[in-house]
Image 1: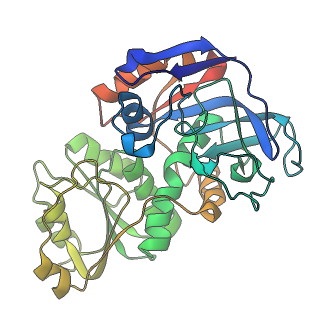
Image 2 (image 1 turned 90 degrees about the vertical axis):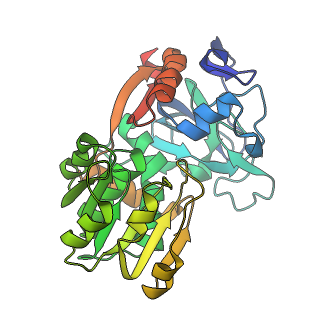
Length: 346
């Protein structure tokens, strides 16, 4: 099969499009013919540069921390899946062979594409316990992006922030992947009132197109003043931020109202931000960081996407052979929507 292989850290050109042996599923594993794998700024691009040493990346490596496709082979002990099933898998998983439900997995775990072969290949083997069925009506490209971003946004807004119908949510980074998904979950799934925020008018208005009630361009508008005007002086109930921009987040923090909640799963614009502790305790604000997601939420995310409540932002779909170009594009435009690699395209 064809796969992308990294044998040394460095610029995009260190990735090679090569022939490698087809992987064979071990006990409790399935093999997926990959139709989609997303390109991620940290888990793919930064890993390839060698900027994620703390993750213990082992070379040579087939990258790609997620995949969506069709099962074409089943390992011993697997009964929950059958050949032809449409599935998606991502994230941390057992590294050693285990039972199909993972109940006897006592060994090390790690992310596919970092500690075990990933989705930048025509085929990949994953534990049966980490695969999720795709609903009818949800394509592979969309499913891979949903798998990557929606469960994190869902966890932050539904479980951690406990955002309620009718509450105000301030969504930072409106045009980004987590921001655009957060807008749609807050508005179309929860029924909250949503204010989208971005650093340009065009990107802020993307939030309106996704369902936000209001949009603020912080490069030309006073963020705190606009939020207080929109909310009638009350401030927002939830601030959803995954950027930690030190020039913007302090103003957004001042727009949080009584008993408000700030939730985040990222800090790529920071990480150090000044917080006004007078406002923190005067308004009885809760701040919670929560990376990752809950497995129980993934089917809910897939169902919401299949129903049209969540539409992921895909900027480009490229064949696997153009992975080097995909990495160059991602590095050249940090604000770009998602890039998906499709090995079935060649």
